[in-house]
Length: 285
Picture: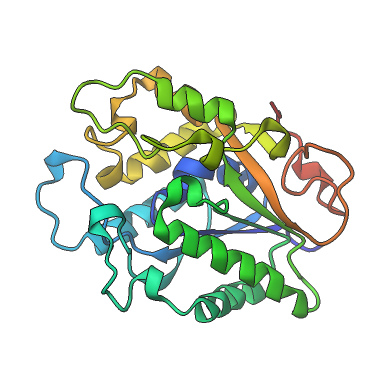
């Protein structure tokens, strides 16, 4: 029998843990080959844990953090495409020729296609069209993953059947944005965003998963990204109970299909795909 395979494409170390760590861990535990592409090493990230002191090579640090996070999730070693973190806002690296935002999109697609040919995923996962919260590198990764999914139709056997996007419902994004934030603390990546733009309606969500059984693995992966989840980070302001509650739900919308779906919403990524029905036995919300 063909081994079930899932390919996730994100932009930076830690993107995978925040958005879908529980789902990746869950599928890995059921025998799915889970492959993670990170288009950059997160070189422009801010260190959110003062105890780490000055870090000379943030890219090398975050690469090591991602490798550790993947071990906690039980997934394969990450694949790095070698582009540089573009930063965002006032730190946008517009003049860096190696920054993700300056990459040749067709070349990036081709690199993703090489991984698709190697791991033959039935399912792909990436950012939604707004990149979660509009990060330029997220938008680039979304575009490249979508382009690769479309081009993969020429590969013959082992063509990806579904493309999913990470997503937030209007209700959940509003709840996160309305939570009290201590004075001087990082308000989080959603601060100042319009949920009507960056979130989706409940009816748009294809999969809403309660990953409570895997939240410990997800939290371990988040802690592995110490540079990004320290006391000065958005999640660093949450109590342990608040953090568990926020992290136990993961939402996904559907970005592409090759073939029909039998129900809506889906029970999971592989729901209805021949030979993989036994994978979809976890609780949906």
